[in-house]
Image (cartoon, rainbow, N blue to C red; front, side, top):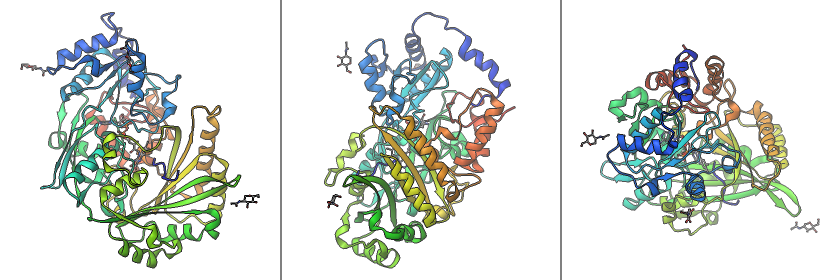
Length: 541
Ligand SMILES: Cc1cc2nc3c(=O)[nH]c(=O)nc-3n(C[C@H](O)[C@H](O)[C@H](O)COP(=O)(O)OP(=O)(O)OC[C@H]3O[C@@H](n4cnc5c(N)ncnc54)[C@H](O)[C@@H]3O)c2cc1C
Ligand SMILES: *[C@@H]1O[C@H](CO)[C@@H](O)[C@H](O)[C@H]1NC(C)=O
Ligand SMILES: *[C@@H]1O[C@H](CO)[C@@H](O)[C@H](O)[C@H]1NC(C)=O
Ligand SMILES: *[C@@H]1O[C@H](CO)[C@@H](O)[C@H](O)[C@H]1NC(C)=O
């Protein structure tokens, strides 16, 4: 989700013995779990860890524990009092600690969640609603970035944010970049596991399309790279969703060329200024997916107060990989309806455009990217996604705007496809939304902690989603796994019914790639160690 600028499945037979191992065997010692865990870590790693900086236990210092838990977690919904909390948080400072954490979680029979950047829409990286007790491993101390301009690549550890990665690339070269998310605080570890799109996707595809190698710890605590994990697993981790196959330690990514000068613009229209939806209709028909690949124009819909009443606005927020004059030419020919003028356009370096598109105020120095912060304050939110393959007719738009205006804090982001996205085969990585997609819709509703009736907002977004059904992809109704949505289904303990349901949400996220993900999951993690509400299930036996 980008806030705009203006504003286990258990195979029954397989799991029974495991189930006993994990849940009914009482710990052999009566020492608190964290003490047993620490002892186990010492037995399994030779690298020492200063407890005060790596271990956070509520009983020891609850405010410190909460601070660490909340540090990168983006969705306040999953930080409320009623949400289950981890027994403790461990922040490893060495690869061997990550390996030992897997071994020790198994030994103690506790469920494990792990977090890179904390942006999971359903809080799955720091909250388990399906199994307790659970512990949390936070990878934010593992954030090294090594950029190699000579061979146009970089190794980046899971706990680094995309903003830091962009900054470190730009620090070495003005004509290299990388394509991942628009929001600077995303953790590269979790982000790429779902595909990772950004404002250069029409030119270069997804972050996941541009991964050369990876280091991952498997369910046995073994460190693997591309050659030792094999091409199946390497395929699955680049888009098959987070926390199903292993723990990514680092990605080796391919840098892409960017021009010395790029151009950005943001043009906002109220409903009244877009009579008959002329501009929006032209965007759908042409400007989203049919103009040059160097151009990315997204549309952000929001609701604004207008002299006591409400109005909807559409904001055209764009990056062009080229200079102003070329852009104005492209727009004059392809999208004159927007009426873009020279004054609307700002030329800058690619790294400045990252700060701009991320939503920081203009003139914010680029080193803000090193702070790992999002420009937006944290809020409670619920989001959903859709893919559109035929322009939405005017009749559909009228009802859509009406619904949008019913909600106070609604947001929609339409994000253009086409270009290279349409040329990459659906099975290249698990992310299947390619040819034929004109744009993706993200729906968001948000509310502050003081809101007494949050269910109203959840109901609103579900209602909007059902209204949109006739206008979006169907059979399956596709969805983006990085915009995780538990309304689509969640894993349950009954393997058979759960698998049937997983096939439904699995098809939405991965289309036919789901079957291959299930086969790979069953091979690389047959005990289903890596599991959560929407992890890839094992093939039922
Ligand atoms: C404000 C905001 C803006 C966003 N903008 C974009 C965008 O522009 N483009 C886009 O594509 N997406 C975007 N997203 C979605 C984002 O890609 C996903 O939320 C992504 O999963 C975030 O990764 P993370 O490491 O920050 O999250 P986390 O919450 O840490 O992890 C997400 C999932 O991956 C698992 N995971 C975490 N680390 C690892 C690891 N090292 N190895 C294996 N699994 C792991 C977690 O357990 C969890 O299941 C946005 C989300 C937010 C909240
Ligand atoms: C710790 O170091 C010893 C001696 O170097 C080595 O034999 C042992 O395998 C190491 N253990 C771990 C868990 O790395
Ligand atoms: C607990 O943690 C807070 C930081 O969140 C710190 O200011 C405080 O001194 C700590 N208290 C103790 C007793 O260590
Ligand atoms: C706001 O509404 C009032 C009363 O309807 C009207 O007099 C005023 O001109 C409006 N202001 C603007 C800026 O539209």
